[in-house]
Every structure is written in C-alpha cells, then in structure tokens.
Image 1 (cartoon, rainbow, N blue to C red):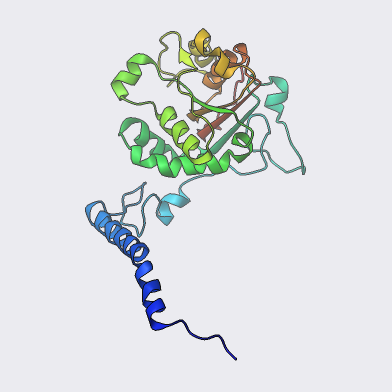
Image 2: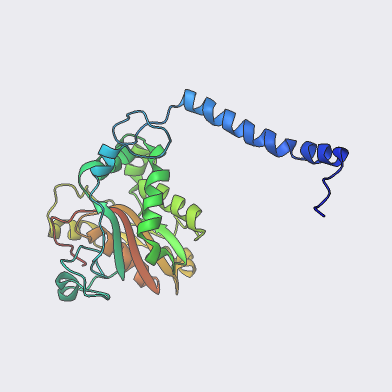
Length: 271
C-alpha cells in the first residue's frame, strides 16, 4: 500500500508555516525590482543598460587583456611557453625581487585602465565589488596562505585630496570575501613622495626608497606573518619593493603582492 496523504489540517499548517519564508523571498524580489528602477543596472565600463548589476557588457569585457598562465612565479609576468611547473623569468633571476610573488588581474590597457582611473579619480566605489572579485580569483594562490592583508598606504595630503585610498578599499573587500584579517595601519608612509607618473624606472625607485615603514607599535602584527600586499597598479615594481622592504624589516615571513593591473611594456625592477 502507498503512503497515506497527510490530513487536510496538517497540510494547511505546513503551508502556513512556510508563509514567512515565501513572504521574505517575494519581498526580496520586489525590493530588487524597485532598486533596479531607482538605480538601473548598467555596464561598469560604458554605462550601457544591462540585465544585472556589477558586470560588463560583451564589448567592455572584450577590452580587458587578462593575464593568464604561463607566468613567472616571482614577478607574475607572462611567459612565452609552459614548462609544466613553476617558472622564473630572466628578469627575476637577474634581480630577485624583495617580495616573494606578484600577481595581477590584467594588463594596464583598455577597459581595465579605464576602470582603475574611474575608481581612483571619479569616486567610483561601486566598482569595488567587481574588481575585488577578480582579485580574489587571480590571487587564489597568494591569499590561500596569507595571514593578513595590507594595502599600500596613500600619502596624507593625497588621501585628504582624494578622500579615500583605492588600495585600502580593494584590500578590505578581499578580506570580506576571504575572511583574512585586514590591517590598514601596520604599513605607513614616512615621508611625502612625488607622483610616480612620468618618472623613469630609476626615478621611481629613488622616489619611494625608504618612504614606508611599519610603526614599532604594530611590529607584532607583522612579525612572522605571511602578508598579502594589495595595490591597484604595478608599473616598475618600485612601490611594491619599497613596501616589501619595510615589511621584511619588521619581520614578515612572506610578502606577496596582488594588483589589478600590470604595466608590461616596462621591465619590473624589484629593487
């Protein structure tokens, strides 16, 4: 014999019990539709209408030159062929970097360059969710072993003028996605530096040399820790190297660097 159906009264009780969940789901859909009316979903790149938030249209997506394997294990720069195991580029062999590994989401061209520029100079903090998702995916090898996430600090005057540090926004979002502690206070700038834009490779290195430090009161948060250093763009590697030196002097066990973009028309200088 088959299983007897539940009594009508029990069926009604079960339906009533599911009403709160049904109402929450329906309410969520209604709020989502209302939100879309107030703030329509647009492409983050060209602002064309989209069916969902935090995404790009096909054209803007095609304008991103993502960096994929094979890569130099130390500098994260593309390699011409895959040997089937970890590879180190000639640049990393000739001048080993202060940091242990570096990874970047894409080349600093096209759509990625536009997105970073909008984040830094046009107050586009709505981009953080999309960009941090890419960083988490790209840096899975790095954050898998990280103990703490530290952003590259912004100079005080520049922070006052811009009102936020884009590296800090990205680092905090990565922390929220991975659960790794976020520490924006253990790496500071010790002196004012000029903008790196337009400087040569050697000028960039001189500009930031000795410009970062770990305060003595924060040393215990860095010593013997694996640090994930986050920034928006790596051009020559001078800023990352200067930060890594300061973290290494404070006793960091490992320092990996994760950025949104890599300028690959220059040779990284891991000074």
